[in-house]
Length: 163
Image (cartoon, rainbow, N blue to C red; front, side, top):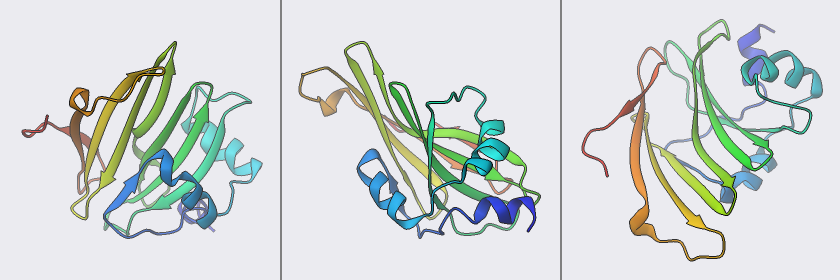
């Protein structure tokens, strides 16, 4: 099994569009097998330099196969920060790009959340907002933006008229 096959093994293929948020984490967890410690040490800790012994990882899914790259999404849970990480990989299993596309970040009494939707055209639409602890969320304070996965596997921000 080559490096790419070894990585893809943990990520069930999904269909697009797909919504990525904390609300769906238990679904992802139920549909994939957990990462063994050896995979975390040999692969994920190379990708995640800031991980510590308390960091958790959950495989979520992979996007339908593209000609020049594969795309996987996993959840990374740390202290007061939870991210859904999108990684594009070349055919050798080497990282092309890695981005957090949805997250929950707790900073003092401010909770920042973002959710993402990956569309069939590989546009990633993201809505981000924040709330003070105990206050009701105000959707008018949210920001929306997009990323795009290019045919090369690069992930870029796209600012075309959103917000």
